[in-house]
Image (cartoon, rainbow, N blue to C red; front, side, top):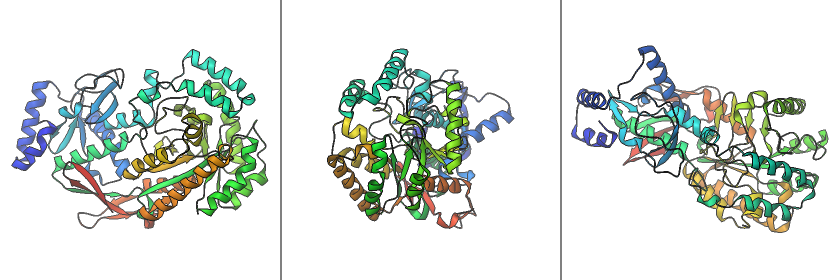
Length: 491
């Protein structure tokens, strides 16, 4: 039975056995019977469930998926309703580009004994988005040889160029960026949309109208805001004290990412000054020359020096310069969390984007994605000295109960014009915080909360659910309700 018929069958009162029989007839006719032995099939089903269970942290009995056929050997783009996906699939066809006509696998989702039978692996799709495998595999995120040569020349000349000269070169690189339809600009919530759709269909298949889960943020906060400052030059370092004054005047604490070598002196006194005022210090790259990810051997050599600096000062967070990144190499870094992956990377030198507004784990590291446009991009590339884009992005993020994370450089808010816009942003965030109960947090606090939440569990039974685990006193029990053809969350 196709998913398009589920609502009709539920309203008509078809028995579970009838639904199962209809599904079996349909799958045999279409040749989509599950292959493999029972043990491997059980393991695969468990892995399929993990992505959604990790997102919501709901009891396991509410999520049960299986694959409806043999997955294709090749990965490509297809649609799941309104969402573009990149993965293998067991039905239809897969396109090589996201702007092609995409096959919609939603029509091939079926119900089998109150389980959802999917023509794709949800965990694989979500990983391919969060880890930007779609970009790395088809070349969208990788630099060509010509681009690498231009990059080398640019970083050689960069120390001698003023911002007003650099921005013209960088604007030339952006030609056609608005024509990219994936990830969605200005905020892509594909992961959240996919999780919501899967939970909704699972609830309908199981004939239930609400599911308990652990709310995303502590104390019932609707969303989260994190302000970060990447210090690029000596002039920016000297402005940090004044920038902390500005943040403090709005009741906001922020993190400062410093370059350990080559750019400016990072003294123990400078680090202590930041920490003594309740702000946070993290590492930004090694020397900000754009070559951290040039090759694996060079990366490991530099990673050892970065780790030494972080260990000496007790630093837990990392960000790569210019948001160049390769998460597959992060095993060489010894950080609790990273902040190098943009939500949508249309304006960045390295294209891609994680397509989520929530933190997520890769290995033992928590990724705290950059979900809004950087100040440099806004002011100098888009020539926009207003709050309109930031407000639009914040609205889309809060609508998904996500994290609005900012990069505002001390170097680029020294001038009064930019500083005025930054103050307007802080004013808006303060109003938002009061009006919608937004949690304003340091990246390290987000890391601690997300790890604590991940270890919590919901126990009990219908009507008597409770949350257990260290830190659960700040956690809130929430429910996902079916309202028409969508989910609504109630704390």
